[in-house]
Length: 139
Ligand code: CMP
Image (cartoon, rainbow, N blue to C red; front, side, top):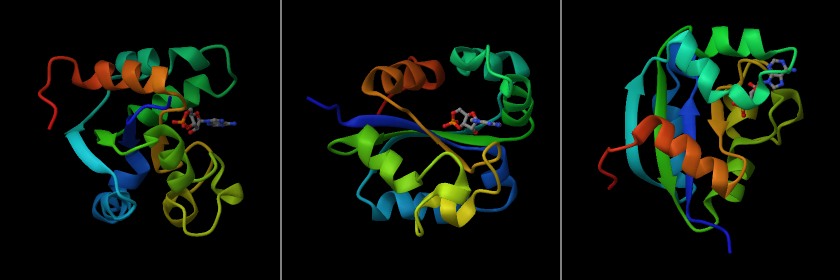
């Protein structure tokens, strides 16, 4: 059975472009409930740890440097079938391939600066949510 929570970040490009409100509006409109949220900034060390799974990839250095370049919004979202439905809402990793109307089609600049992150499995959603919100009250 699929879970009912996923984890997201509005990435530094989305925050810097003034798109926090628009992106949260799309998220609420799609039926997700925000159960935890914060504006924060990742150190290089924390960004590196969050994306540890991509350590061997050629883009890892670029990814870590970008994700620690400015503030982000981290949030835990709740909805039935949350992980899959959220990935549908945000669209493909590469905005050039994202379906029209998806968050990345609307707001992402490139595969690296792609406006939002969404967990890719229930297991990773739980790990990523705990990474940012361990000990925080969920609503
Ligand atoms: P995200 O869903 O946050 O998970 C891993 C991130 O790595 C992904 O979004 C992209 O932003 C980034 N990424 C994936 N492929 C590339 C690439 N070829 N070049 C740069 N960044 C990438």
